[in-house]
Length: 70
Image 1 (cartoon, one colour):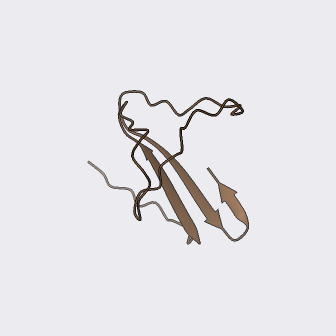
Image 2 (image 1 turned 90 degrees about the vertical axis):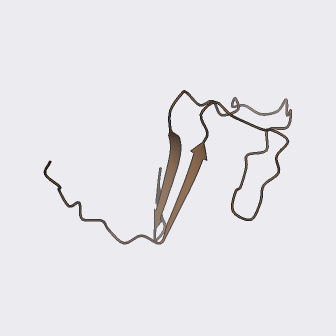
């Protein structure tokens, strides 16, 4: 197997949000190392709560200066 090196750019910030495999505990509070989404019933919410399929799901946000990508 050939290994290819991928040059990475330096960034200011990286945030990774991980959704476990179809597992959610709406009563578990955030902690110092895990910031959880507040899923309390809110009828004014215009978007549905997050849903995960089987497998690994992650949202990666990268910030470089004022530019932010997802």
